[in-house]
Amino acid sequence: MNIAIVGATGNVGRKLIEVLEKKNFPISELFLVASSKSEGKKINYSGKEHTVIALEKFDFSKVKIAFFAAGSLIAEKWAHIAAEKTIVIDNSKFFRKDPEIPLIVPEVNSKELVHVKNKNIIANANCSVIPLVVVLKPLHDLYNVKRIVVSTYQSVSGAGKDAMDELASQTQEFFQNKELKSKYFTKQIAFNAIPHIDSFLEDGYTKEEQKTNDEVKKILDNKIKITSTCVRIPVMVSHSLSVNVEFNKKYNLNEIKNVLSTSPGCKLVDDHKDGGYITPVDAENKFETFISRIREDKSQPNTINLWVVSDNLLKGAALNAVEIAESLLKNDFYGK
Image (cartoon, rainbow, N blue to C red; front, side, top):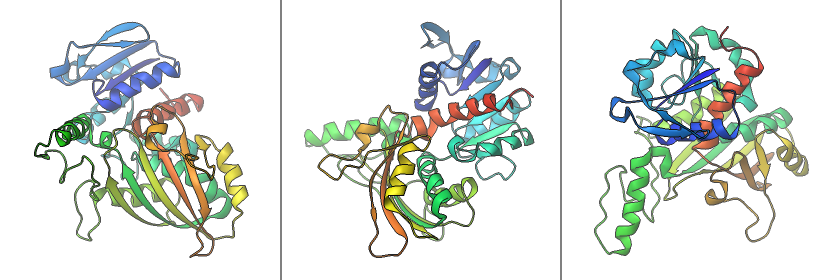
C-alpha cells in the first residue's frame, strides 16, 4: 500500500522511516511530507532517495495510511483534512482525549480499532504512558490493578531536537566553565533534574502528569487510581519509570516475573546483582519495553515496585504507530 509520513524530517518522522524499513512494512510507495522549508530535501528509504513534499501540496487520496509526526498544531489543522481521504495515525497529543477517537497501544487495546471509522483518526499515546500500560496490562489481567504511583524520568528527546541540542551545548559549556543559559527548559538541564514537563495546572500538577492519569484510564481501565510526578533528566534518549503498583488481589512475585518475561513487547532483565538491570542507554534503539528491579513493597499489602525503561522515540512514538498500522492490516480495517 501507499504510505505518507507527515513531519518526515523530524525526530519521530525519521524514526518512523527507520521502523518501517526494519519491519519490512508492505509499502508500494512512500511519500515523505514536511513543511515548505523542508521541501526538496532528500531522505533515503530502502536504498532509494525520496524527495520531501510540502504539506500544502500533498494529495492524501494517494495513500491508505498517513502517519502524522509533526506536533499538535499541524494535527489540529491538517489531520481532519487528511482523514477525509485516508486513515490518520497521529503521534501528537491533540486527539488523545477525544472519546470518539481510539487511543491505541496494540498490546493492550487493539480491539478498540473497530472505532477507527468514527473519524478515520487513531491517536498514539504519550511516550511514557505506552511502556507503562504495556507492562501493566498483563499484571492487570492477573491481579487487577487498584492504584499506581509513577515517577517518570524523561529524556530530552521527548522535547524535540532543539532540546537535545541544548543538553549537548550546555554539557560542553559546563566543562568550559561558561555561564549556562537555558532556552528550551525552565532550568539548566545539563547535570540536573527538572521536576516539570509541560505547563502547570491549577491543582499543582503539570499537563504531562494529567496526561498520564487520563491516558492510562482510557487505554487500560478507568477504575485505576493514579498519581504521578514527571521529571526531565539529562539523558538524550529513553524514558525511565519508577512504578509502584497496588493490586486488588494477593500476588505471587514469581508469577509476575514469569508473565512479564513472556508478555508481548516486554523483556525482563532483573538480576539482583551489579548491572543486572536496564538503563536508558541500554534501551536506546531497542524495540522492547524493559522491566527490572521487581520487588515487594513491604510498606503496603498487595503492592510491588518495578523499574521500566523504553526508547521514547521508538516504542514511545514511531514503533507504536507502526504497530498500530500492522494491527489495522491484521484486522483488515484499512481502506474499508
